[in-house]
Length: 393
Image (cartoon, rainbow, N blue to C red):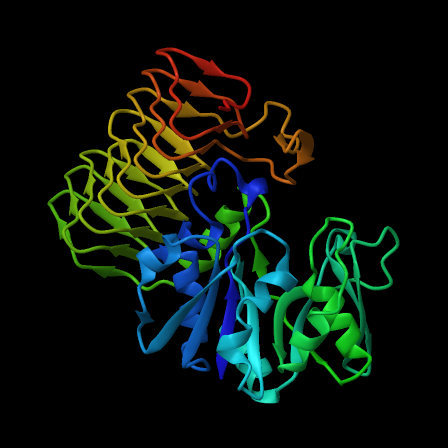
């Protein structure tokens, strides 16, 4: 079976992490998000069509991933998921069935196999807040309709964005009108198809979607829960390692360092001396780290060497975290954190949340960052600065 992964979205709700890159190219665990998705597809897909808006994904992945052939279709204008799928038509129109997935989601391999083996189908999951998703009306295991973000949901079963469809979807897509968002919606085509063919609904409880920056930490925890400890680097004396810890080739772990798994550390890093890396932390390639970090993602080529604290945070690529930089992650009253997304105050649902720092940021020494604050790429803070609001371009 062929698969189509939609990777061309602008991802504005995950700013500042996606100002310079698309969500599928964000790192979680020991790989990029898109690589985790391809790993899960490897048992069912011989060829994957990646719908992209630029050449960044191709530069990262090339024309092959493992045994999967990669083909690229470009969406020139952001006109929605329906338009994105139409961009892939010429690559799959001779296939009886093909799979469609969203590039910013993490799907369980078991569910991918289940849908692929059955045929025309889709994947659903229960939600405690179905009004924020496409809500499914299902009868005897088959789709009746999808209602996008209804004020009064008919059920708590939601659409995960994984489908197995056939080429009839393209004829339907060519006749759908633009939605209120001025986009061509794949769900509108699926609704029309549901009145003509039977679309089986399978169920999972393990689907994860990245909507906001902190969702990346949830996906990171899931991925790290599945890793196995392996050491391809060099661990010097007087280092303590507990739990499942993966250390990449060329990485050196210096004396006095304490690592508590699950943790993934990439290639050619220098960790320590006297670093403390706590659970659910991912560190990319070519990173120099010497402070304390917990439940965070530190991406490639970042430096954070001197007495810093990074908690419940995501740090982009090529960032310099100066000595004494601290990310505050807990409110004194213990209540949930709120943060601003696209001008709206959002309840994160989390009691602990740190900072979200874009690529190429430099902090000044002794910078203190309030919980949930975001710093846009290429910006800097002054020595001793207290970041109380998002720093934007």
